[in-house]
Each structure stands twice: as structure tokens, then as C-alpha cells.
Image 1 (cartoon, helix red, strand yellow):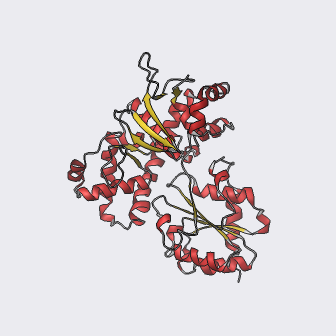
Image 2 (cartoon, rainbow, N blue to C red):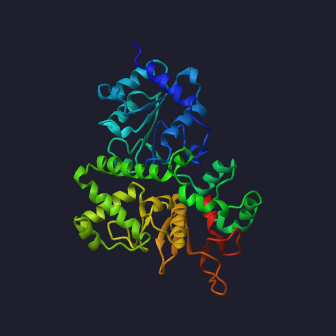
Image 3 (cartoon, one colour):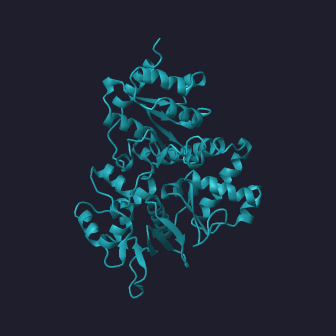
Length: 399
């Protein structure tokens, strides 16, 4: 009996009914020649669509050599990944796409077995950002790990306006920002789209005909209940405390966390508050900013929401423009793999990129007469800048 065939039918249906090709930079960055590829991403950023898009772009449906499987299938409560992979390979299969791999017990052990038993098989799997693949005893030496992030401002514009804007490195952007901005502004007015992006442009489900805020709240709760509690093996009874901590952080973000007060308010120990901050960071719900020379487990100097979209449904009150500007800057720079540290004053960042170190000040409008040449200024209301004054929106073109 061919038990693989029903999965092929599902695979074919999902690929054929995938709506549109959403251009993601990661598709070009992955070395697809690797035999075991892990794609981590927070809930809601489009990991499933990414796998199906890869299948549609690179494989012929009729050859049946590529197969997408969601491991929340009840079938895999009685069938092992290893035995299924064996049957798939025997039928000419070459690439398995395994979605939500953490839903399957002993997944890392069996992926290792597949890697060793079937050298002709490639496996691409998705998982949560909470998973520590670099510390996994079974996989750390053989898996290539990539991160699928939410939409950058550039990706948002490309999808919304059917454009094909390129991304730039931080070094390129700083050196040539005036020319880059002028070329982009010949086609669009980016400031018309910056606030909509900050409100609802980070998560791909803004494309769905649903209430974005309600959808985002549902996604956040799923992150806490599944990605944090389940993967970190925290008892369900602690969920209300974790939710309360996230809410309290959202009210003051960006702000300096008072660990003692948070401990009292959430009725958990100071050490637990510190651990929960790290869990929320790994789930990409918050970002933590430290001074130079400091890092976790020390107390962060500032806590930001991970992206600006999260600020609206969680806080539910007017949000300061400066808070949005700083959160946008942190999020877009952070996703370009640059390292951020806190500078001496509020609204100031130290950014380390390769061997370069830059000092940034985030402002709402261009300051006159206060321009320090050793600083770079990311300014919110500018279309184009000059010298060391750079439009804030342009940092959304880093990935």
C-alpha cells in the first residue's frame, strides 16, 4: 500500500493554490546544496508559505521528488520520520520539506538518522526561533540554520506596490544614502508608506482579509503558549504571569525594566523575570539593548518591542513617535545581523557591522546647528538626506 501518495496529493494542492510569489531575500541567501537545512522563524512570518514557494520554484510537481509535510499530522503519532523517509527515497524522493518539526517527539534524533542513512536525501525543516539548534547534540554539526524574518520595509513596499527594490548593506547605505534615496524617491514617496508599515507591515498576514490586530493578538498568544511554554517546557500555570510580563513591558517600551517591580507585579522571582525576558526575546516578542561590554544574563538597559506592529494591539494607547522611530530602527538594523548597543543618551545607538562601529542618533526632524560629525543621524521626516544625515525609512532597505 502506497502511504506516501496521499501526502503527494496534499502537496500538489497546496503548491497549486499558493497565492502569488512573495519575494523573500532569504530564498537567494540559502545554500540549497546543503543536505540538512533548518529555517527558524517566529510564528506568523510565513515559514509554511516559504517552503511551498521553494517547492513551486525549484521542483516539477509531476516528478514527485519533492514533498511537503506538516508534522502536526496525526499520522506521525504512529509513523516515524525515519521510516517515512525510507519509503519516500525508495520511490525516488529527493527532498523532504518538514514543517513544524518540533511537533514531533525525538525529531532531532530522527533527522540525524535520516542524514546518515539516506545520503541522497535533502531535508529542509522549519522550527521556532525558541529552538536552540546550535546547541542540539544531534544536529549542531550537520545542520545549516537560517532565519526567516518578518517583512522589511523594502519587502513590504515591493509587495504592496509591485516593485523590485534591491537591498543594501549598512556600509553601502551610509556611503551612498543620498543617491540611493533619490533613486527610490523617483518611483515612490516612501514616507507615505512608513506609518502603514509600522502599524501592520511586518507580518505577512496583513495580506489576508482579516482584522490584522486580532490576528496578531492570536499569533502572540500562540507564541507564548506553544513556542515558549511547550518548547521551553514551562508549566501552563505560568502562562498568565508570562502574559502579564509581556503586557507590562509593552506599556513602557522602550524603557528601562525595573526587575524588582516586575517580580512583585507578576508574582515571580527576580531570576524568573530575567529568564522570561530571554524567552520573550528568543520568541521575537521583545528586543533587549545593553551597554557596551554587557549582555544576558545581566539586566538589559532598555527593552523594546521586537517590531512596531506589536506596539499597537498590546499597548492600545497612543504611542510616542520617538518610540516608533527607535523600535523601527532597532528592528531593521538588528535583522541585518549588525550588533546594537546602547549609547550614553536616549535615542542613541552604537552599531557594530563587520569591523565598523557607527554611532547613531534617532530624531524626528533634522536638527540645525547641533550636527556632530562623529554621529550619524537617522531622521524620521526626511525623504532624502545629506552627509551624515540619513532618512530613517532607508534603514528598512537593509534586508
